[in-house]
Length: 425
Image: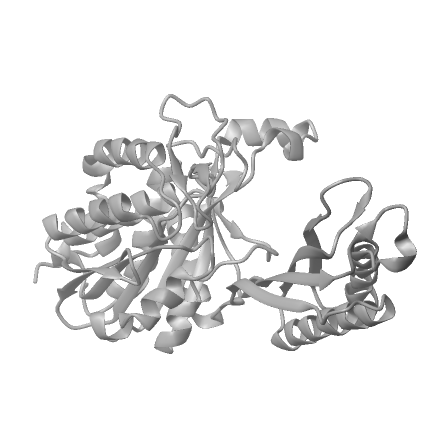
């Protein structure tokens, strides 16, 4: 095996050679987004590129998941993950490569589709990192696993791959790595020890009344009044049942009831979401929601028991301290002052379902995607909220560079913190 004194520099020396196809690929993927569990085109691109570079490829895992493995002698085994799915959002960026795609969602509705969360960045950066590693195998040792995951946005893609035999499709893994493009200045990376993303649970609650004419409320049980009482009472869970030192959020995002102003309906549907950083708090909140809803139904003389449906459940993301410190040190050495600390967020991800199922440590970091000058001007003007589109916004549009270069470098730097320290010197 040929060696150099600096494996990282040797591997990253190939970056200028992949930049043009990476940028073209990013535009293509952005222009052709796919909803969760429908990522056939994106998965096909990933699988074809990996095969071209000599990876052992397994596709169709968990539906549209793809893994590529390159075995390069003895050493650690590093899994690097990117998510592929887009969102039912109508793009409003005005970009020349903006999406005009639409698709049928899981409910059978035709919806617009956009990469409003930056998963197109993730796919492109991981393919870039995979190409660089495959093109410089003489400078590192071990096993690199590139994993392209479907359906992150609905919280089931990682678990779907696990349940479909992911562990049997790849070699044993020592560490797992992932990143997300965020509304912070492009060219920057940010790490965080410990809990970094919250657990999340969505719940659909159906409560029942007794329908009737609006002029005769005495013979009806009004589900809208019942739902209103539930909404008010649920707000006391965080303020009065969760300790001030524990982070928790409860949002009622939707109430659907009634058909006409003078008709009292017979049911109401509430949809809510909770975010927590502790499993005991998570359990306590879910139990409290059920208790409050049941009690309010009884107080309103509801003719039927309420119904509860949990869906879109995301695990807590807790970065391993040792792994995070190793990546942070590598980032500091490579990016210098552009390596920063990322605050914990109430956003959620399902990435951790993969390393948790494999029994391995992991870390998850952020990469900036907003033009640095635009970001600084917004900060100086006190207009960050107004001028900087965030993930899931129809205006979210990471700048192509230096976002792709930074995201690709970050994956290589992190991977080589293990693969470049395996006797290659």
